[in-house]
Image (cartoon, rainbow, N blue to C red; front, side, top):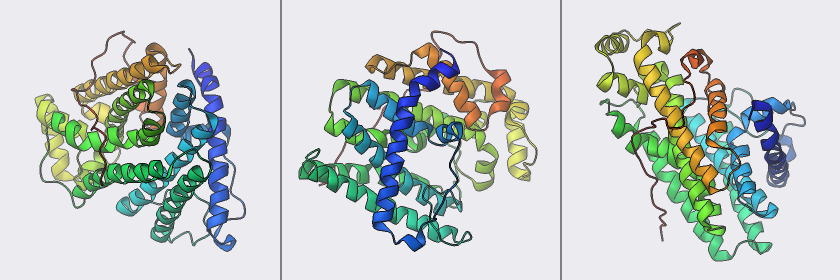
Length: 352
């Protein structure tokens, strides 16, 4: 299946996500006075819209494939987008960034206030959409309360891990420890947020199986991001899987180069595949293998994308994450490719 065929299969879910954004826009105008909302926002081209919302669209496509009814698909999509908005606003505050998801008409330089408003508004949207689902008899009051608790219980440890890295970390953990502690949360559990509500409401073996597949894709995605962010993470002293792999398992010359770079803190115009070719290739191939395993689990659950076809989609993810320079290292497809050392999703838990 080529890229065009994959996009064609994803297009119905893209349309679903456009409806999700329309619903959120209605919620925004219902919640916030119009003077604080931009009158017009530039409309994204279709491919830009797809790239910006790839995982939101992927989740909706999975729900479609597994037979989730349209009304509940939209509910899950709005919940997912609300969680995404809360996470994005929080990341902005932690990383001093200004990624926006809502057309707010506050001063451009008011980054922190914009982020605070994103968190407040998306929290309100989450409450409003769940309350409406109760009114529409999609959820019971007990369902709503339980979903709220599960979302909050899942967000806290993810945020706590991020908080633990503020100001830098003192120890370079082993690759296995990075996966089982840091990336299990920042990668696997982060993507699993999209399956909290479906697992509770649909509660089918297929949905739970898809949840496990998404966890593996989340781990792989975080490792891919670590390859993108290597030099930034070295500067800030954050956990990074590629750093860990070089430090603990890389060739001696790459370990020496890493030590020099860490001491000099000069990272301009550097390319990871030239500085650390052996470690970069091995980590890249492990991330590909882990993502392939995740998509295989999804396919076995009923998702339309096969393991072999997902191989080209994973390649697109590398480009989407700014790693096009690594594509000369891209392996040939093999039915069996080793992934990351085994980690498992956390069991569902609820606070009472």
